[in-house]
Each structure stands twice: as structure tokens, then as C-alpha cells.
Image (cartoon, rainbow, N blue to C red; front, side, top):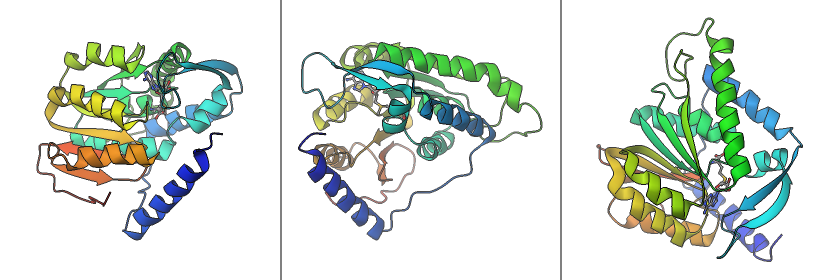
Length: 272
Ligand SMILES: C[S@@+](CC[C@H](N)C(=O)[O-])C[C@H]1O[C@@H](n2cnc3c(N)ncnc32)[C@H](O)[C@@H]1O
């Protein structure tokens, strides 16, 4: 655990207290039938103690090659994957945006990828991941879900967000470092939703947004994870929120949402 961890953790708790005092509340949503199945897969991953080697391209590495470290599936699922209720909150935004094309930076084990792909419009989710083992596991998860989602669910559930249908989840996992893969894939579609969840550094975030902005659909949202992960990340979030490109910003503490186009009103703007 680095020297910076404790001051950063205290700062995060302090920011959470401010966020709550200002009326911030984490909304809990009832999971859809598809999300219930994905929750079961997540629970299995959290109990899977299979050892894995990770090539970490994230913020812990300053520059140079990725940091190699040993871990287990369970440890990664518990520490890096978004909690199911938070992933389901993202799905709520995808439903509102009627997303057809979604870009994710940081697949990890593919669990949030799956939740996003299982929204009712069955968007195409293109998900970028630097670690080859995690990229492979994300693909497995989607294949696995496509095999049994319909099997398990097609009995008795009606239409509605997340309802099982005969349409498979559409996910493409692209392996490689973001600085290489993002320029390659960003021009492929007009993105309705972009979820940025990897390389938690303000400079990396700004560079990614620079590439993504021209490729956003006329009404779109960019979800940035862990905006309170560090002072640096919070500064990066504040700069984007305040630079005038986006029409509204929503601070949900665990992630921030920047909205483009539409008739969004600036909300929950917060102070730096
Ligand atoms: C916090 S995890 C993503 C969690 C996932 N979105 C979820 O909700 O379950 C971040 C992932 O991004 C990947 N990553 C971080 N920085 C990267 C970079 N610069 N290039 C490629 N992958 C990167 C890591 O390997 C890790 O799997």
C-alpha cells in the first residue's frame, strides 16, 4: 500500500461526506431479469480464487511498460469491477439515452460490459482492455451469458428494460493499451454512451476526451468512473464539467456523467 493511500483515502471519505451533506444519494434500482442473471455470474467471479497474472496499464504505472502482478479472479472482481448496483445505475442511463453504440474503456472481467449490453435496445458495446487475460475473460463471460440468458429467462418475463429476448448481447472486446486502441476504434461509430473506467489520471482522461468528443452522437453521455479516486482525478472531472462543451453534469459520487445535446439542465454541479 503506497504512502499516498491514507491521505487519499481520508480525502475521499471527506469528499463523500460533503457529497452526502449536499443531498447526494446513491439510487438503488430493482434489477431487471437479465441483471439478476449477471449478478449471479458476478457472485461466482467474486468466489473464484483461480490465480491470474495481470498486466496493469493503469494509474499505478507512471510511464513505461505495464506493471506485472499476481492476483486471483476473486481479488480482481472485488477490487476492480464495478459493484452490480453501480453497473445497473449505468444501465439506467443507457436506457434513457436509448443507446445503440456504447464505448467502454476498461473491460476488466466484462461484468459492467455485460450489464450495459443487456439493456433493452441491445446496443453494440465496444470495450477496450489492456490485459490479454482479462480481455479473454470478458469475452468468455459474454459467450456464457449469451448461452444461458435466454435459456434461463425466456419463461414468463414480459417486455421492458432488460427483459430477455432472443437477441444476443453484442460485445466486441478490443485488446491493447488505450493509447493505441482508442484512436483505432473511436471513429467507427457515433457513440451514444462512453464509459471511461481505466487509467485514473487527469492527463490521460483529458487526452481520451479530446479523441472522443468529435465522435459523440448529437445527444450523448460520457460516464467517468471514480471521479473522487484522487485529487488529480477530481480536478480532471471538474475541468471537463466546467469547460462549456457539455450541457449538463451529474455527480453520482462513484462516477460522474457529462451530457451532450438534448435539453439537459445543469444539475448537481458541485464545487471544486
Ligand atoms: C477499474 S477496471 C475496469 C472495471 C470495469 N469497467 C467494470 O466496471 O467492471 C480498469 C481496467 O482498465 C484496464 N486499463 C487501465 N488502464 C489501461 C490502459 N492505459 N490501457 C488499456 N487498459 C487499461 C485495466 O487492465 C483494468 O482491467
